[in-house]
Length: 77
Image (cartoon, rainbow, N blue to C red; front, side):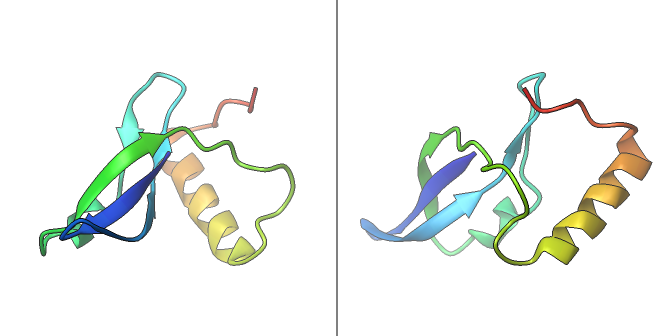
């Protein structure tokens, strides 16, 4: 998922989070928006195929930790 971050009516960037196949949304970093910012215009963002263009190693580490905690992840559709 991706949404626009707004402050005082002006867009200041984007915020990303996950929606599981069950529909449950996981947002581990929403608490960073505590100074009047709002996240609006949420929409589904499909991950492009292949490795991420940056921070790939960090992504793999996080993915490994999530799998250890939650079990195997569903295959992408």
